[in-house]
Image (tube, rainbow, N blue to C red; front, top):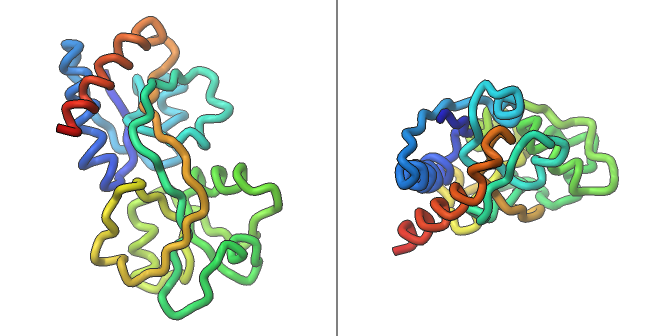
Length: 198
């Protein structure tokens, strides 16, 4: 089976090994394909890939052909990153004078979470992993990023201000053609997660 994933330290270092072990337990070898954030779920939906390693629940709305596998793998924290010497609060999200970099997927998640219209000064890209880098290079003053709830902030961005916006659960997803395996995958995933905690 082939799974897409987003280049993020929690996904690459923690979740990929859990998924590999779960499918190996089922006697299935997996292949991985890194895709831009906005393409992952579309690739699963169109059967270009069989599933996605882990996607946050807030972005799964509207994808009826995807099966969400329990249990949740990690709590994702959507955060606002700001350069250290500027104003930093949630109101930035609604201020048209503040340029904010985000992936289009995170932008849609934030838009779905808040009831009032977001700033028209969002700049969307399709590579989650470079958002913090763009702030470090001072190409932007603000960025929306995703952290794992227990993720240690890397030294290159620890000087940035971090404002928590909201939390969402993250699940492994597969195309609906694998619905017949849902319970089997779920049990293997739970066993793999239990081993990871030891």
